[in-house]
Length: 139
Image 1 (cartoon, one colour):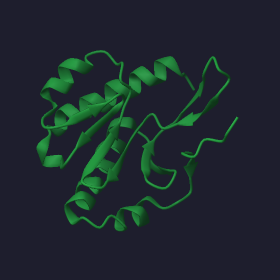
Image 2: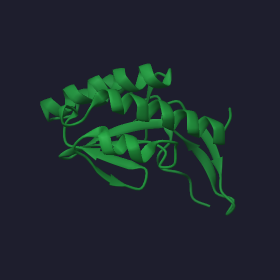
Image 3: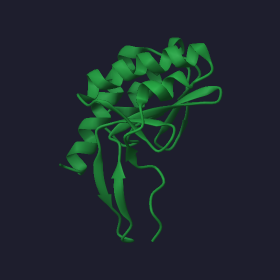
Image 4: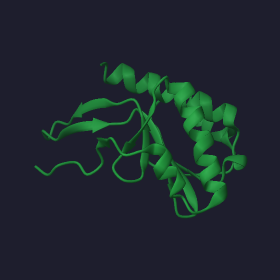
């Protein structure tokens, strides 16, 4: 079985954020670090080369594949920021409806800039998602 490419590492989150070339996206990412840290209670850590994750859980699939993943996180991508949450927490649909301008794909929510969304709703989403993930994967 192949190794997971996206693993927690000791790379510097501040150094990574300084490498984000778009000034607005860099500023939004710095604010997201504050929001995610406050909502999860975990320090920002790099996962792979471009994901900033908070907390972690260990999963094991029926196929035998297993690994670790962040409880929640985000990644500044070209032209958008990918927010990573569980896709199955209670109240998700209602919160998504109130979030603001975004796109979705499975557990990913894409936003162009932080001012396009309601950060109070984002905080609720983060908290609900982490609570859900911790109930499925207790540490």
